[in-house]
Each structure stands twice: as structure tokens, then as C-alpha cells.
Image 1 (cartoon, rainbow, N blue to C red):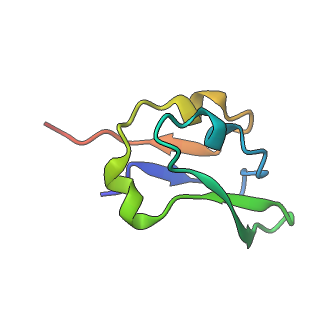
Image 2 (cartoon, rainbow, N blue to C red):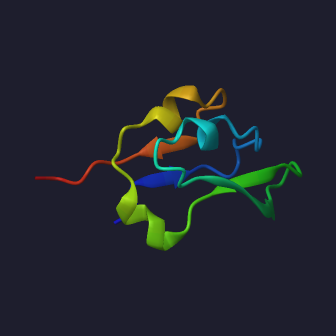
Length: 72
């Protein structure tokens, strides 16, 4: 299950989310969105390492990240 969902339409590749991630799971990739901005990315294998703290989503000025928490 994905914990970090990136809205490619809104991401501008500023990198604030990557800096905020305590696990250093996010990085600026080489893929570009429709506006030509490089997108932030997370490896699918790193999704499990995410602790769902949502720091990345809180610092994103474009609200391009959504964090899901596993149901108990």
C-alpha cells in the first residue's frame, strides 16, 4: 500500500519535501510533469520505510503530497 501519493500535476520539484523527510526517502527525479518541472519521487521499495509523519506534505507549498496511514 502506498503511503506517499504525489500529485504530478502540482509538484514543482522544489525539494522542500525531500529535505523535510526524516528517513530521506524522497528525491528529485528526472521525470518531468506537463509544466516541465522535475518531479519528486520515492522508490516503491521505500514506501514501506515511510513512517507516515507527513512532514513532507506539511512543507509542500503546492499541496502536491498526500500521506495515507495504514488502518489498524
